[in-house]
Amino acid sequence: MSSNPRIADYPIDPNFINRWSPRAYDGSDISEETVLTFLEAARWAPSAYNAQPWRFVYARRGTPAWQSLLGLLNEFNRSWAEKGSVLIVVLSKTMMLPPGAKEVVPSSTHSFDTGSAWGYLALQASISGWHAHGMAGFDKEKARVELDVPPEYSVEAAIVIGKLGDKSSLPEGLQARELPSPREPLSALAFEGKFKA
Ligand SMILES: Cc1cc2nc3c(=O)[nH]c(=O)nc-3n(C[C@H](O)[C@H](O)[C@H](O)COP(=O)(O)O)c2cc1C
Image 1 (tube, rainbow, N blue to C red):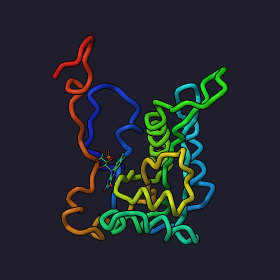
Image 2: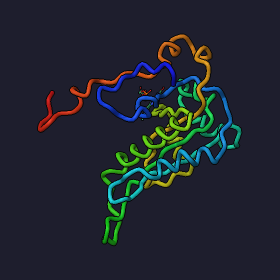
Image 3: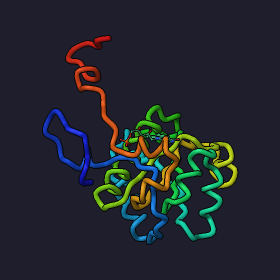
Image 4: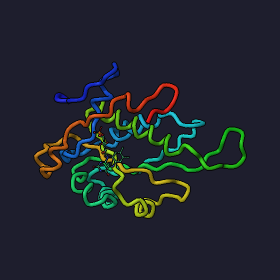
């Protein structure tokens, strides 16, 4: 994006600070091929024991499942995400088979691993000229029922991806927030040796 106010304190690939989560989408259609490209990036995320616990249920705008996934979002998220191009519900497998084991055991990293996959997906969408926005504001139990999610999978998050729209389409309060957000300084987040409060 041309007017990105973010500045990295250390040299990183610009794609990291170019990714951000808008709410003004333009209602574009998206091809399945494009959605699969984003999911392909997610597929290559690392995971403990290479268990690959991430799963995705998606619905593209204009397809029969679109309204069903849109109906899972809370009112606030639905008000702007309805102009997105594809909705994705992210799931993770809570049980895993450790190498050499005969029985599955609870995975202690299924959410952590699946978070990596979401990050990869969002980065690929941004690199490809789209924008992904993660959402916790949706009905997870309804998602479980409506999307036929088996009990051993956790419902993690929802995502909308679309093309950037005109921010004047948003209510005033949201227009003011429609820009890449800042971050805490690295010195408040990363400590050598021991945690510093
Ligand atoms: C797991 C997750 C859940 C989120 N839930 C919501 C949400 O329900 N509604 C919303 O408007 N934004 C939501 N966000 C977006 C965050 O507020 C946003 O990512 C954060 O402010 C950082 O901004 P950036 O993504 O533009 O860098 C969520 C993001 C993540 C990763």
